[in-house]
Picture 1 (tube, rainbow, N blue to C red):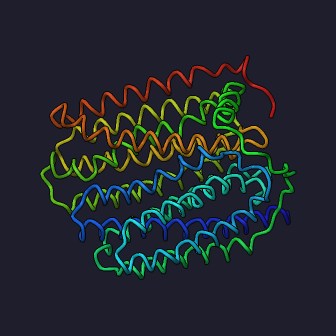
Picture 2 (tube, rainbow, N blue to C red; picture 1 turned 180 degrees about the vertical axis):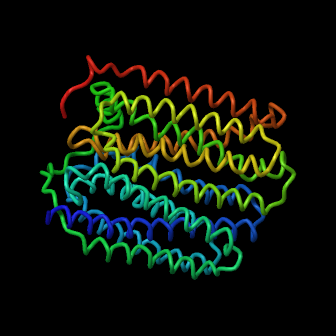
Length: 414
């Protein structure tokens, strides 16, 4: 009972820390992008700062993805929050001099540490939370990240043009310090044996281990591909459509674009929170895995259908409703995969499996986001055709993954 209570306290503290630090970082990116575009008028320069939210993840995994080793993940979390705070300080002086190239480089470096910590926080779930609750609590922890993003997105939309950028930098740096203070109040509840630090292995070796882990347990295969697939085909495409679709197809003004960001932010929070509650109530990963298969298939089909319906609609209210529902179910599907990774990743490989899956999602989402604009030009802004084709591709891949799991052959005790 003492362990369970401490686990709940750890969940409260770590979730608050994750929410605060992610909100600070995302708010800085939003306000910075608005400021840079207003002062330079350069879409290329603005897109550079937007891409800094994606690029560090891939760079981190290219360097290393096995963060289960060495330092206790709780201690590493605390250290990385202070490192991120320290790297935020120089940004203030570059902002003052309007040296945006210097700011971009500093954000890139800081982003590397942020992404290491993003992976490390998943690993930390196994020491901060009791083993029976680790998967369930980890889903709540992940939800707090989305809560932070949602808060920053909503705030940024309404105050991005009113906040002094230097103040936002200070708030961002303070968010890391506050997060570190909260993590310092947590305590380790599961003494997971920590392997000694190992030499950095080549990307080829780590990818081979990732492939072998997925091949050895088809449950993990299905769960591990859901986050990158959903991030690529849903988030990667709708993030590109948001500033275009409301104006070009629906004939609405810029306020509709802002509204779409608000709807997406709220939907992400609702989706991730709803999944966490469902995971607790129904103990999803304690059920036969065939139910997870069925959920993955039905959720994917529903999300794809809602997406096609949203882009096909000419009624702004219908489109908004379908879009919001689509993002909710997209997030629910993403969380299903994420929680499965926590539940099924081999011992010592949780950080690597999650890190590589997450990096793949970020990379392909950024590629697809850039591709969407070119394809819209090619197909004459035929949104229904374009999204319909992408959804067919997505459902085909998920379908193959769903049927690849054969309980009589692949199931084994953990």
